Image (cartoon, rainbow, N blue to C red; front, side, top):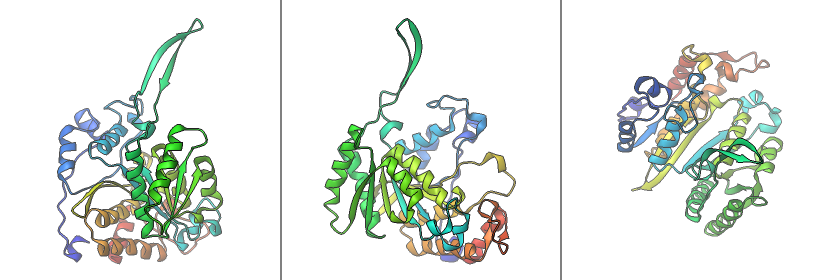
Length: 342
């Protein structure tokens, strides 16, 4: 792609997560974070695996702590996860084809607030009623500026889509849900061309299954967005199809971003040439669009993926028993087909 388009790209590789734990004894080294800050964008793989699962959630030996450290350290407050179901892929969804055909939505998730980052966050031993036991505390905190900036991202995304934002909260129970709804409503008045509605998170989870085509842009706080974006991913048939972009502030018309596939490391098939590379490839397309401003190049990559899928090429995770004409390929084979289609 770079050679064919005249785009010059310089890559520097670093270990993060489980690979970094094994090599250096820590999931995210300070020098790795420093290198990331000096880059124009980050194209990320995945972290995690069962061999590191016994580490405490906040431990520097836990691969996931690297992700939280990168998000916070790089100011990546907005996660964009597009979910699109091509007609050729409708049969691979867990839902009936007629229910998912035409799905084209984007989950916009606030990434640096809420339960995952709120303080206090602790586990303590307490004694009560003559009994001793443990109590764990996580605190869900949001401020007006945090909600405002992610709301602007959602409304701006809707401007280039179908001009609808559905804001997800739990305002009937949570104080921060009330604040979330009030602030989003206020920001929405600055975008009169965008239709805004509000939906409780439990109803949103149900509606994603019952009528997913009603959604355009879904605006969510951190934990709700984490859960709903994975549920939405199931509509496309496989996490291996879905990219994501985690964005920071925009400066000089460019946005610093962190781009990664929606799925994890899939340790059960590692090294077997079975994994679906499409999510990683589409993440690179998002990088071209949001961080480098190369919309034509991004569209060329996305078009190549669509052409490969419409031509019947499938990795194992998106094979349908009812599609006798599908051409099964491995990781490298799918990558080669897509490259030839660019």
